[in-house]
Length: 540
Image 1 (tube, rainbow, N blue to C red):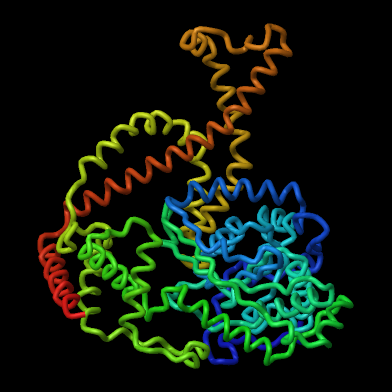
Image 2 (cartoon, rainbow, N blue to C red):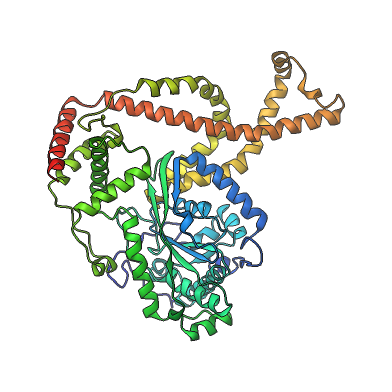
């Protein structure tokens, strides 16, 4: 392939291209070109059966993977038309899953090319009619030719546009890659070219013009199991019908991909960025953002209105960011200018106190009611956890029996991936999903075999021979064993849900120990920083 471009490491703006993992660097052109085309005649773009199976399983897994998950803004969604959902991208597969599974409409999805070529995952994404996209990073680094990238992306973007115009939802990330920053990267134009084509298709068919939905994705610790999440649907951005040129309408109506006018694409891109920035941390670094969260907790204690939800914490931190951050012009936001550090005097003690807490894996939730020191043990909360402990421990052996292989694979893949911490929970999710489908039937057969070996003891313990619950013939015994096998599957799921509560209690217990073992010198420094913080807040 001598005609491939020379490999480069920066884009045309001079910014670093995303680091390619082994998977993203492996472009399988033939497989990408053979990706199944979506259908827009039914309620799902892909297989109706497998789409609903995937959604059902995914919802069960997310319920276990996140301790709390709140969604707001659903009442503002225009559900009579297609929705292109756009958000910043810091948590791998968790980002699109949170959007797709919370939105009322079914979705057509596009994503990085290797989503449809990976083993196991590729089979599911093809059933879901996920459309592959070759990013500029793969093209500029010589992963494929310009002609191949244009062919794949042109087809995918046209299919996404057709699905959006038909009333389906779609999620695309304007940054083009998942990352670890506390502010957004420069936007790519792909999502906005797609939605303009969708608007042109809708206009040609006399359908409502699709809307662009800015979404805030907020995770307490995105790389942790049982973290907190808030999915914030922002106010829709409407596309004016007059902004859609007639030549684009005529072209896409004939099934051809034509690039929308650049000025329209850039205008939409810039307008959405201005709406998305407030829905992200948008700070110079994570230390600054953690300091804003601490300020929110301290202020809540000063006003006797403690923050009781992750959403409340994010909104409190956002209020302080608005108050303390230097004014930033629209041109600077659109141009992706480097964010200046907050210089207000209050940020210094806030950072100091937050840093001391973060070093011990604590945060503003661990402060006392006055916000001047660490809080003590809450006996009532401890008693409620102790009451449910025997039941949770009783179910633990079943959890260890059926989930150990999945946990081992998830940790192995998540902790050794070359895609960064933003992909860690993606591997945990995939291990939970595919592990359940692959291992649970064998685990259930193993449990049936173990019961058969000790059947006499089981019969003595329960007082009857469950083999004969339908009758005494061999057929009746076979039906009884099949019932036992099928009943084990929801029991496995229940053990996972109860054990996640046990994990929550264990994590809370560890937080208590960390507060009790807080270094004496650090404790004095924390008190001093909080005292200085209160003094600055008195003057704010």
